[in-house]
Length: 439
Ligand code: SF4
Image (cartoon, rainbow, N blue to C red; front, side, top):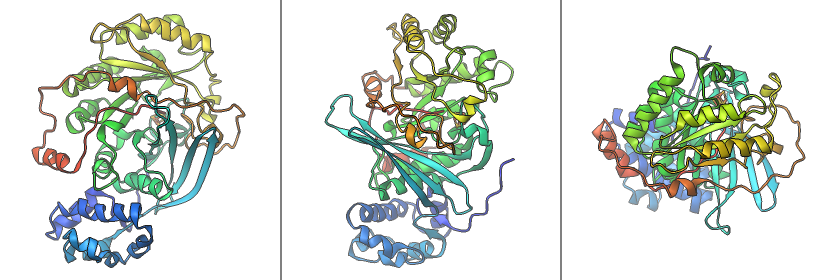
């Protein structure tokens, strides 16, 4: 049962609530990104000014720089009355250092006491080894209703949906922790398509050049398959990347791994929705496949997976299972390196939509952050079990996607034209995609 949330204050980063309040009081919507612009410039260049913006003192914004943005007094009154700079609080910041890489996990408490985690993953560029950047893995819900058998978050069940502001605030906290993420993945706690409207609202702030400045092409939504939402993502958010957590090539096995994936012709309908997504967006879809030793890594299963994906505009990321408390209940084990290589070889014999070999990568990053329980499937773990293995260097696979030619769709990309103009006004678009995942 999802808990009803009592939320007294609103976040200035909540596009849905801020635009509603401005509209209600006759303030133009174009003033929303200007408010963010002022605050993010303070975050970057004048952190000392932030103290002046703590509620109820948005009056602190009335300096010369603020005046140049021509934000009306009425907007400041609304901010003072209803909004705060942050509705959530970082309770704990953990660091995991390996070589030159430094990952962070933030435990964040919401105003009603709900807690989520977001992870900052330090990446080295595949194209330029001297270049590094951060990918932030954000949560969209407290707990998750999907209950994937290997996942620690799934054990909690769904407790609450986060608001758009609470999702966006995770990036605010990253900035305050000294990290301005370049990439973002919705692969923390929760199924983002199960909290779609709030996730979409959060993306307004996250992608805005005035807000958190993350290009849509560097953002990935990962889903286990909320079927009716998938084609809608292509329409509403055509530049955002989609990852499908498949984990099994047939209905029976998939149901065992993802108990929520039940229903008449579920897998068939899921793959149809992926086809539709590709047709509308023209984007490649990443197929994520958690490899569970002895469960879904046999040669026969790899062949079945290859047949399921043959000819599709997809690539596959094999993710070796990370031991979790959740997985221990089923005696799940990490796969052997032989079975991973065998799966990769078998799948590579199939083709993508252009008749090329199906591209298959083996995730090497799942051990990153394991000592702070930030590795794949481990969010929400309270176990402090440590693993002594030295994390390996991370390599982003965005280069793979960047090299793919993206088919332009002839189908209108956003149904609501007004929404499209708004998106185009405040977003910067860039190719590429960070693909690094949990769920
Ligand atoms: S893997 Fe993702 S979708 Fe599955 S239970 Fe965990 S958080 Fe939810």
